[in-house]
Amino acid sequence: MNATLVTGGAGYIGSVTVEALVARGETVVVLDNLITGHREAVDRAIPFYEGATGDRELVRKIVAEHGVDSCVHFAALSSVAESVADPERYLSNNAVQGMALFEELVRGGVRHVVLSSTAAVYGEPESNPIAEDAPRKPVNPYGMTKVVLEQALEALDRSGQITFAALRYFNAAGATGTRGEDHRRESHLIPIVLAAAAGRRDGMTIYGTDYPTPDGTAVRDYIHVSDLADAHVKALDHLRKGGESLHINLGTGTGFSVRQVVDTVESVVGNSANAVLGERRPGDPPVLIADPGKGSEILGWTPTQSDLESIVRDAWSWHKARPLGYGS
Ligand code: UDP
Image (cartoon, rainbow, N blue to C red; front, side, top):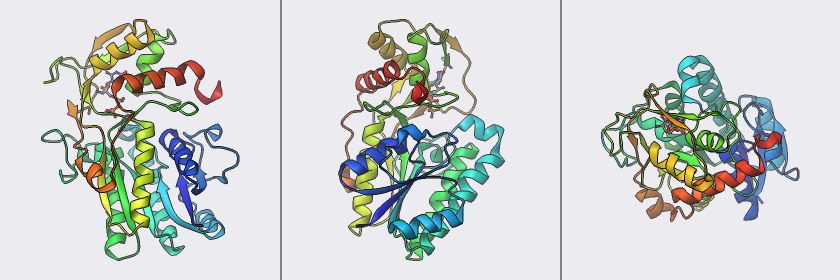
């Protein structure tokens, strides 16, 4: 049986994907440096290595010892704001270490890579919904590092060494019964509004009310973390069956405004989030909505849990069970 190496398997989307892979009988090995991940998010029965994706010796050892044939590469720093403030750290952690990982995977005979990519590769798109052939024009170092990794995989594919799936997430959200979002410095909308509605923070700010959208607030395409995990499993199947390399948007095709998210959270929680209106957050495009047609056509992937109310309900259950995240 071939094993799948999941880097970043202790993170938010990584840990839910590990759960989904194991549930369908895959042999999984996790590599995570635990800088943003949580050891508690990975079942103790799963082989776990604490270390960097750029630790070539460690990657070589894991690939050889576990008979790794595929890798799902999540491990990355993923805060846009942080990447603007500290681009070197993002270049080194995401791009340089990612390259080292790819090189060792290829050397070790790994044939397939599923990359955790992002809608940030599109930057500020000219139109919505965005199809995969829209130009890559990232507007921040985080998005740039993901473009670099996509391009590296394209080169390795052209040389016949691997096939890959670059999965471009729109707004990951929601939780499963046992795993959810736990970022040490939370910047994402849904956990922030939930914490505010739960009275765990004083309130929250709606960033920007003068966008060219129906209610003036920014519009995003929210996708349930379980639907994301399912897409990774399907992408891996596709590659293992000899399918061609591809880039796939992971979104629903429907956008919701910040105002609509705040309203939905307030109605699910039954409390006000004390939202105040503020300035736009620098670098935020007005609208980001996926055209999800390609994923459905080629991978047979359709989101089933991503209506906004289900996402918010699941995130709320997680928040209630683990108000302080994995530490509680
Ligand atoms: N947002 C907001 N207040 C917050 C956090 C986020 O108004 O406290 C807005 C943000 O400006 C964006 C949307 O919510 O328009 C989603 O932001 P998030 O950080 O969750 O994801 P992003 O789209 O930036 O990846």
